[in-house]
Image (cartoon, rainbow, N blue to C red; front, side):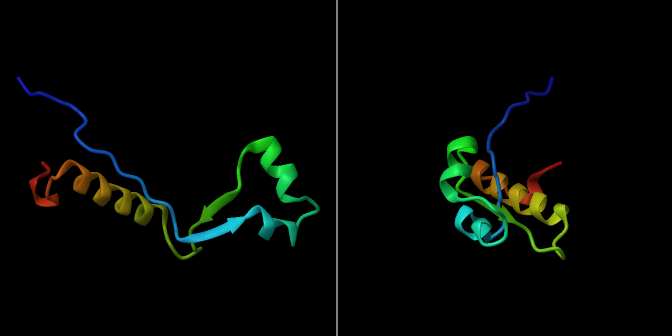
Length: 75
């Protein structure tokens, strides 16, 4: 019988950050209004030429690192 469990986790967010102050320049709103209603102060956006699969790949690498498992050891 096989044993199964979560031995590591990983996440990845793109480097490009857009803050509420950045949004103030393009939308009729302000940082205080957004933060008070959503709790969000900044968000990360991937460049248009970066596929979602690349974000998943990066998160997977971090999960493997967290689990101390080499990619070649995964079945």
